[in-house]
Length: 435
Image 1 (cartoon, rainbow, N blue to C red):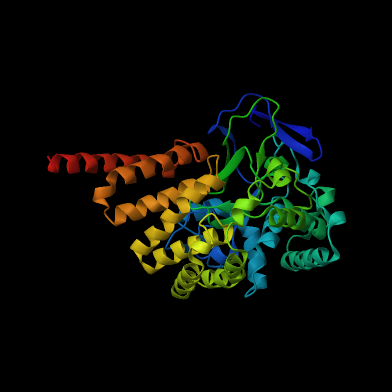
Image 2 (cartoon, rainbow, N blue to C red):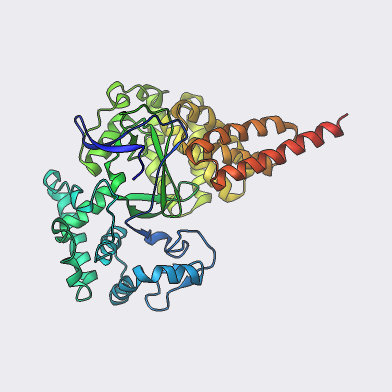
C-alpha cells in the first residue's frame, strides 16, 4: 500500500483513510486493481470482459455465449477466472444472474484466496449492515443470495468453505458486495461494470470530497482535487452530489446506511440555488423527469428531444438555468440533440450548462471537465472559425480540470493537448489569411 495514506478511526464514521504526508491537488494518491470485477450485464455485448474496453466487434465465448473479448490475448488472460464462471453460466442459460451475484461468485472463484497482504482492509472486515437494514431490503438481498446458491449449485460448494468464515453465508456475502462494491466507469463516466477494491472501501463519503476516482479499464485511480494536509481524512462521493440535501441523505441512508453530516449537508448551502424560480413551473420539470429518463433508457432520442424542448420553452425564464431540474432536463436535451445529429441545437443547450457547472463544481471534477470537452467538440465540428479563441479557451479550461482529475498521462489529457495544438495552428493560419 502506498505510504501516502493510512488506516485510522474517523470520529463518528468508523474506519477511514487519512494522508500521511502532504498531497497536492491533482496528485495520484493510489492506483488499485480490483480483487474481483465483472462487466455490467447491460453492456455484456459491448465491452471486453477482461480489459473493459468498448469494441464494436468482440470474440464470444463459445461455451457460455455471454463472455466477450476484444482479442484472443484478453480471452486467454481471462480464462483462469472465467473457466469456473463459464460452467455456472451455461447451466443457468438463458437466465443471467445480476451483476452483484456474478461479482460475489467471482470472489468465491478466487479460492484459494489470492495473496492480498498489502490490503489495509480485508474482505472479512467488510460490513454487511444486515442488522441496520429494513426487512424489505433484507428480503431483496435474500432473493439475490438464493440466486447465488442456484448459480453455484453443485459446481463449487467446496470453494465456499475456503472463504473467510464471515463470508461463507451467501446473504452476508451478497450484503457485503452490494454495500462495498464500486461502479466502474469508462472515459465518459458511463457505467461499464462493478468491482471490489477492499482497501478503498475504507474511504468515507463527503458531498464535497477532496478526492475523485477515475478508471482505466478496471484499474481504479484515486486523485486529490484539493491540497490535502498530513492526517487529513481522504474522502470521495459515493453518489451523484448534484441533488438536494434531502435527496442525497435519503439515498445514502437507503444504500449505505448512514446519515451524512458533511459541511455541505449541514449548511444546505446549495439547496436554495437548486430550486430557484417559480415553484409551480419547476415542479413541472421535476415531475416529468422520470418519464424522460425512461425515454433516455430506451434510446428514444426523438421523443426525448421533443419533450425536453417543449417543457423548457414552456417554463422559459420563470425557471433560471441554475435550477437543478432545468439543468437535468437541459443535459438530456443536449444528449438527445447529439444523438439526433442536431449540432446547433446541441451547442445551444450545452452552452447554457457551462456557467451552472462552474457554480456547482468549484473543485476540479470529471463531470465539469467532460462537459467542457463535449462543447469543444461541438464547436470544432461546427467549424466555428470566427470563434477559435473561444474554442481554445474552452479546451484550456477543460485541460486544466482533466489533467488534475485524470492525470497527465491519461488518453483524455493527451487528446486535449493535441487538439489545443491543432486549434493554435488553425488560429495562426486564420490570422495569416486575414493580413
